Length: 289
Length: 161
Image (cartoon, rainbow over all chains, first blue to last red; front, side, top):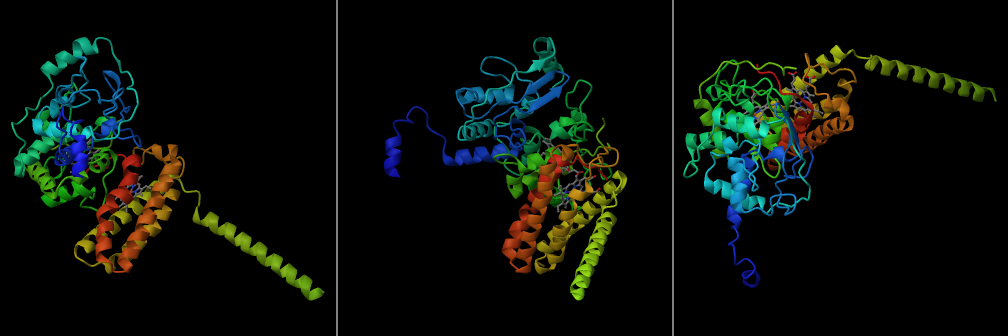
């Protein structure tokens, strides 16, 4: 073992490779985002991209975020990957569409982003070219910058990630697990309406109905106990014997990791924070067609 | 000579009767169900599964391992009825949460039902052996692995109560 380290040392001399603990923490935070499943098509290779997203902007496909040097992010520096995650800019200056929720991930602590990047570098590279997006005219040059400046609520990063209790739950919900991207209704401009944070969306991502998860007892999850919410995030089991499906099933299960891999302490922190947000009456019915 | 012919005739008669009976039985069991009946029946079946699964979780938490055998057995048998309750033409977004993918990827859907049966049998056997550790380990993953793997691709999110 010592021999191996000694022999390896000159090769790795330029950059100190992240420790195993750092990579493990990166995997954990990757799971806390729900496993970045948008970058994995159903039954596809993890992180290889290609999942299709249609919207008023046109059509985009998620990118290959494996460490493949040609088609993935293997040739990018740590800084470049972090900039794409939190600011939505590719190394060539191109803007990403906020389908990748960078206004949310902007709220992630530097240390957590670094850990995620360290973890991504250890995943299996997959050679798979990104599919070109098809946007409506002027979307990228005119609408997107205006929209980002005027409407997109943006999280601010804390100097250090909170480690326990309600602040930890708030940090995980708002900046990492991006619960609001699915559960918060959107305004006419398609920006999340944070005055109704987590109040549900009858037609959310992939046209699925997203339940109201504010503490409203009738139309939200006010009747669920902290323990029941924490259990659900770890197991998919609902208090009534039903089991999560759809996109929630996906983020709980995750890809290389998911919400199910969160510690009981973090799941409890999330549940505790959910109990503190304003209850909002908003009945989500069947998906509107 | 004669008894032999008699015997053959009787055998033939018996055979015909058996076949007729069998034919009647199958038609009686799957009376070409209407789509509405199928939707009612499968929602009822799923509610029973929810009850059994809830019971299993509660009893496991309380350490009553052997007591979950009947529930696990119930799931093993309901799982076999699932494919038959999703006949072609029973997609109805107004009344049912079933996704069109069920009929587009039929083999995957039937495999998900079979997967529930496999998990249920495994759970029953662990509980029957009164193996608390093994039972708890299975229960921990059962929701996601035995039920969620079908709800995820094949069911739209449920209405809130």
